[in-house]
Amino acid sequence: MQVKSLDHVNIITDDLHGTAQFYADLLELDVRDGPPPMKHDHAQWLFDVRGRAVIHVNAVGAYQVFPKDTTPGETTGALHHVAFDCDGYDDLLERVNALELEYKTNAVSSIGLRQVFVYDPNGVLLELNFRNT
Image (cartoon, rainbow, N blue to C red; front, side, top):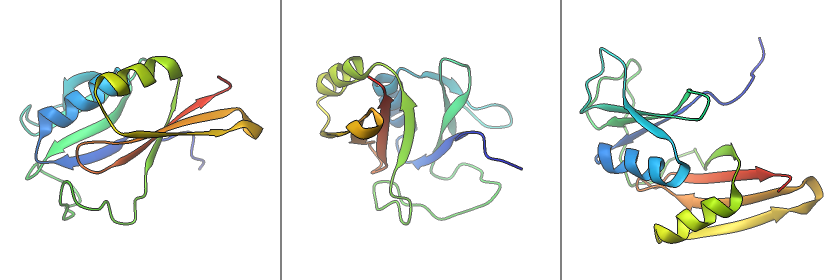
């Protein structure tokens, strides 16, 4: 067995549509209802340009195969951040500013990496990585 890449992130929220729209606006992802038997008012999945559902957003109270207590907006516990490999650094900064989000940037010039850090509406820290830009 070997890990090939990050498959998806699951976020539990008390604002399903607002959280899904945040990710659609910030990361230009396509929002779709989660597949059956999930209900549209319980699950929204966000798809990247390759057609992969990289973010699953579930409403508080939605069915969970492996139940786990979560409190939207509170600390994300041991999870510090979620990182995405991205393209379009300047476009992202324009969107972050248009959405009036607080963010921090970082550069690791030794490996040709620029980063943008921003919180989602539920307190999940995102690390958006742009290589060789």
